[in-house]
Every structure is written in structure tokens, then in C-alpha cells.
Length: 134
Image (cartoon, rainbow, N blue to C red):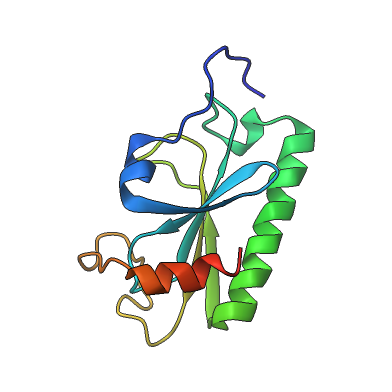
């Protein structure tokens, strides 16, 4: 794990583009504010971390457990055709793991969703309904 005196803060891009849903033991659970795709992001609350291997082994296991928990939740709530789970970080170097429920009927299928269409923000009612699962 990175040793830093800097306190954890969410990357500005994630603050701008996401809605905070919950704080789990390790990660913030975020919702990408684009209602075209059920797109969630886990961000470990550890300052200065860019890669999964930057976490201690114990925290890597916790991240994997929380990723599994989120993935199962997405399967139960959305019943997707495919779950896409990835830690890319090309645009936002702060460690974050995308969890996207994909459907053969979604607007971007089968291509990646990044930049495919302009985002369609969630309504307050939709956000409240999703928060109820967390």
C-alpha cells in the first residue's frame, strides 16, 4: 500500500461525473451519472493508489470481495447479458474499478460505452431507487 500523509480524496473527474451511493469498508460506491447504462465504480479510500498491486494483500482481498458483492448485486437487480469489470485508469489515474451491466439491447452493444453517446443524467427518483439497494 502507498505510504502517504495525504488524506484520501476522490479524483475531480469522478466527483464531477458520478453520484456517491455508499461507503463500504474499503471502497466508495459510485454511480456514473449516465442512465443509459447501469455503470458503477468502486474506489478504494486509500490515498495515492493507482494500481491494485499498490494495495496491501489484505486490501486487495477486500477489494476483490467488494467487487464480487457489487457484481452479484448488479446481476440480481439488472439481470444483464454480461458484466464488464475493469480497472483501466488511462484518463483517471486514481485506482477505481468499473462495473457495468451490459445488455445486447443497449445503445453501445457490443462496443465499449466510453464516448459512444452523450450522457443522459439520472432523475432524482432513479437515484433514490438505486440508493435503496446500497
